[in-house]
Length: 356
Ligand code: 0X9
Ligand code: CA
Ligand code: CA
Ligand code: ZN
Image (cartoon, rainbow, N blue to C red; front, side, top):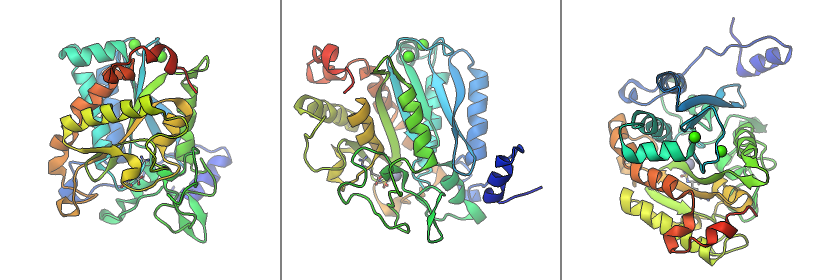
């Protein structure tokens, strides 16, 4: 029996179990990319191979009912230990498929490298690593329908006037729709949604992040939100051109810039405050920093020009362009216990790390 997503949802609400079987695939030339089902299979395989250090959990379901996997990697993985936590999330934007490959690369890096590579082993032993490989499974699958790309960015939630889709990276609540960095128009690529967290998928990640606040202390200390493309390392805030602003003082700004420049040295990207690109309001990193005190970066991955494939670079680049972010991803995790070390102000960590 088959049903449209809308029908399936109504059937599910009646109490019947709805199993999703239809899946999309990449065009044959790009079969090196993982579609949704292949991503899930890869994650299941890794979890099975590394049960002591990896768990495949769930953030819950997307608007259309797809499971949103949540990966935890750490020693004693079944226990919540008192270790700095790091979040890597990918694929808020549907057409940015290379970011799913980035997340899968990190899963492999931390699991296959454990017990073999001292740097990886130290991190897995001393950190709790969270990976959200697919923030927008509905949009990602839609982007592949009919065997061709649709240049789709948003999620697939109906938004009125027959249109679908909220820009997930404009739907976070901090300075939501404040500053012309998003659109109130339902058909726009940067439509922010009727209100903050109107999108099912931003609710899912928000609720997870808030669940990591224990005894008033946010356990997640640092994060990278992966996008494509432009080869940039970006730090908060996106909503204002000012480099310091409420909640982002001079020491924090210097620390963001020093970390960002360190990452850029290793991956060859350009490092800058996110608003230097253009103003964005309601983005995840502004929310993570301002409301949770998480040292959050946006990475815009390969390529740096539309002539190299834009949002759709060939699968032949995946290996090099994910490995390119190895050092930056590990360095962030290493600094997660005290980012202020990078500006020589470790003494700030005992006081300034308390949540605001
Ligand atoms: O516009 C975006 O959301 C990101 N660029 S993309 O081409 N991947 O859509 C940039 C976001 C940068 N701004 C913040 N992170 N605040
Ligand atoms: Ca642990
Ligand atoms: Ca913990
Ligand atoms: Zn993006």
